Length: 143
Picture 1 (cartoon, rainbow, N blue to C red):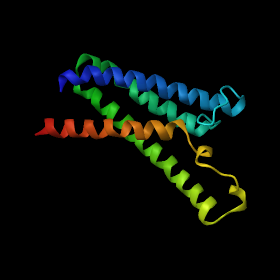
Picture 2 (tube, one colour):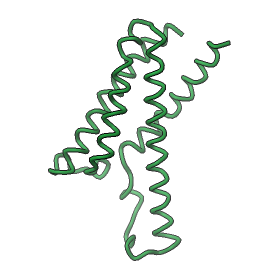
Picture 3 (tube, one colour):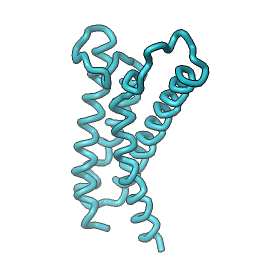
């Protein structure tokens, strides 16, 4: 497992920078159209959560580079929070789809899946296999 710790430290550094940038851009888009993309809407609370996830990833980088197992807890908690955050946005997307197509609400006329597609949703489900792999590696080392 020690061989993987440095790679996980590198992955953690990339994820940290990515989530902090996403959070800052989302908070900035709340007040000014900083980057006008559908996947980066103006959302101060979502931006705050993204910055928090990025800081959690950043906190374990030094330990992972040194080969210390204590750094795994930070990347594990960051991946869990990423997956929970993606799950929350998935539930919002499903609820809006039901509102549009099943209940045929007038507020959702013209709604498409692209209206609720967010960068946190995509990143969370892309990173889910890494969480499962890390869980398997930790449970195989515990034996």
